[in-house]
Amino acid sequence: MFTRALVRPPGRSLVEGLTTANLGEPKYHKAVDQHAAYVEALQACGLDVCVLPPLEDFPDSCFIEDVALLTPRCAIITRPGAPSRMGEIGGMREILSQYYAAIEQVQAPGTVEGGDILMVGSHFYIGLSARTNLEGARQVIEFLKDYDLSGSTVPLQEILHLKTGIAYLEENTLAACGEILSREEFSSFTILPVPEEESYAANCIWVNGTVLVPAGFPRTSGIIQKAGYPVLEVDVSEFRKLDGGLSCLSLRF
Ligand code: CIR
Image 1 (cartoon, rainbow, N blue to C red):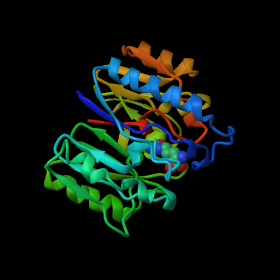
Image 2 (cartoon, protein in one colour):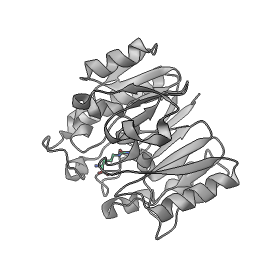
Image 3 (spheres, rainbow, N blue to C red):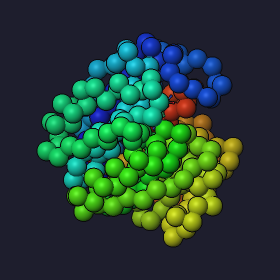
Image 4 (cartoon, helix red, strand yellow):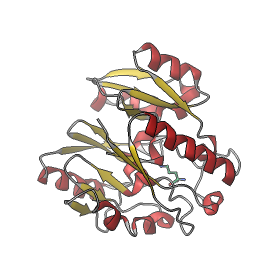
């Protein structure tokens, strides 16, 4: 169960965020409204949500998931692989020290973005992507070992982050699509396959029994509901324009 979440609303600079999506420029006011509705959805799932101030200097800083890994025993501040995002970790140690006594930090030349890390109980799968390198993953795995947690790597070819293509819904169950479906690492899980044309919805999040699914992906919603999960649809269309999804917008712990 999660009790808390950290979020960071978008700043006006959002429109300058990194993207490969080709869906047009995000609308700032709409993004702010969608972010507020996202916070309400987390609260409806029982989370105490701490809303941090926007960081205008960092257009992608609303995707706060990428700057830390929060485990039940320690927090790890990452080192984003996108040069324009490296400064987003500024201030995170102070923020996290309100919640964690044990805080570790990835060092150069390691790079890690939290979107590449999938928590499955006490094990953490770490995607090796254009943003997360082997050295970064190695450091994270070493930190995890110190707290009786474990980690392993998953090489990625196509997707931005590991969690772009996979979500853990507890109960040994994953929602996944694309290149993830054929990965041997996940063969022992029950996999709910997300239809290729709805691949964006593979980035859904389990929050205390409910699954938050992006609005507009009815087949995926249906598959998850049919598997027995209550589903809450949340519209994050403006964040999709920047390749961001539901998981990226919060750190849940
Ligand atoms: C980026 O390219 O870094 C942002 N525009 C999107 C980050 C999405 N984060 C995530 O998947 N965890």
